[in-house]
Length: 493
Image 1 (cartoon, rainbow, N blue to C red):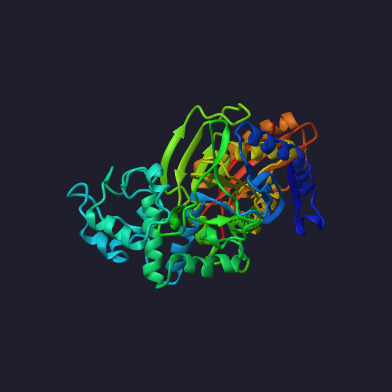
Image 2 (image 1 turned 120 degrees about the horizontal axis):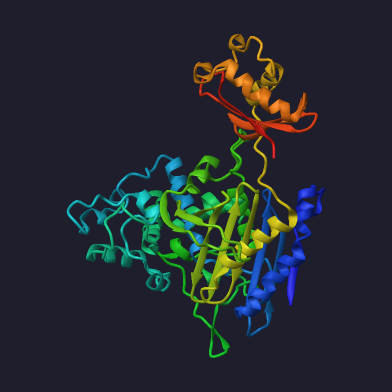
């Protein structure tokens, strides 16, 4: 059984792009349904965010088996390590308030760290940034960390005072550590003067309208709370829900597709950079900073998409976020989540303006695979291309000036549109000879296309000919006004 919904905004006037994406819904639902059945998920909920709006959402199965409560996009699932980026955003909110710096030693905010023994005498102090990027030198601790959610502050401090076992010195490698994010939660508590849950509720969730996202499961409406299960001995067995505590900062959030979709939309709103008014809990530049690859984590040269398409994948970690880029340059940003009873993932493709969320209530349900398959399917079926970069005024101006100047190059050196390196790098006569050779193949110029920008100072356009086209690529200098420093012609394919 399944539940499907279209948001109110999605029912408004639609672009052709949105229509094509929404046409993939039956396939998306089938992918999730098949994945649920294959992996014995009691229930699953998903949502698709496009251009800043949750336009599609759906669910199948049950949020609670014993009472046969159906899962919906409003069901509240514990999202485990998807919580980490929210904690990271809380840290950046405190930085915005001028209350901490990322490269400060963490002991400035948790004094007990000051006297904690290091692995080696030359080990640097753990910084806030080390904690954010899994570079503090702590060991990978998923099995242990998953059972620490309800730990109290005083227990974390006692652990620190006793001394922590390091696997590496800080700052030299990536190793996933829930402990580091528990410390970040404690930093938020100490610096803000209130429990980190309260601070994040006020500073992040309230401004985003995430009114149904909670930390403590006992506060969830009974009909909305998703219970967690493991599949064992061919049956579903319910997992015990842990109460909220110090380690909730690493994995304790409980939320719905409807609510978390607002958080995903905020992450997408940071792209492309713009001069629009700031309306979020932190600056859009803070969000982009979170999403950068701060700590390299791996290269999978033999990676294959779920469809079987081979494409090498590089991965890194930002601030509470996983970052990846494949062989075709597609960038993905998001995070997985796994705890006893639950598995989840969210992922955005900023260049495409789309994001996906999926929650399931089975222990360590692997949602990254299905979400990646869904995004790949949407892009293929809807024929999506990366969103075009807005062409800057200076690119338009230089393109128009170039079109007027070629093919005869009359007074090119006196035109004032070329940087000082341009003609010493290659003379006018050689540039004219190169273009004339191409025109002999494409025929006389009949016009040009609009610019296709790569960024604010670089892009391409086509010179149209009677029997073919010439691709024109140019890049501008850092001067103001920017001048043409490189110009290349080639036959358009």
